Image 1 (spheres, rainbow, N blue to C red):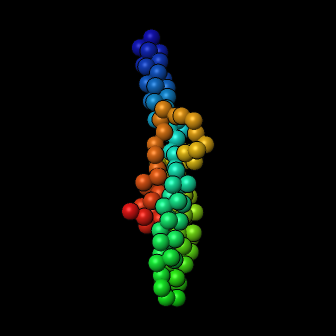
Image 2: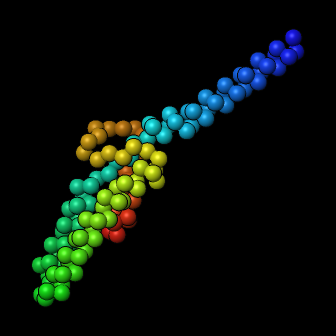
Image 3: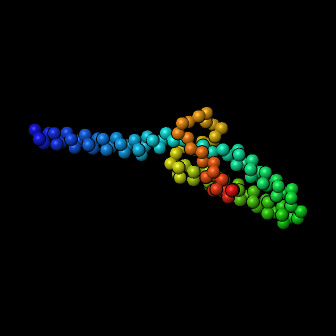
Length: 117
């Protein structure tokens, strides 16, 4: 009889531990949604590029502005690809979500990754 209760206790303990781990590692991370306002990032970078191009009086200034835009276009996809791994969440555009109680704004992290202040 004692072994029956011991086995019952061990089985219940293993089941509880498995359910807690499943909740913490699978269910809760899936409930968190990261949002990115990529339109705002594009607008800011476009304004910076426009200022550099219109303020440039030499070809070197225009070339530097063009290199900056090309570097941004290379860094943005890589930065977007890294965000889900860093936050361990699903990342969607801010305009695509109507409201999520467990959403995290990842726009500042994206700005840092592409070299914006």
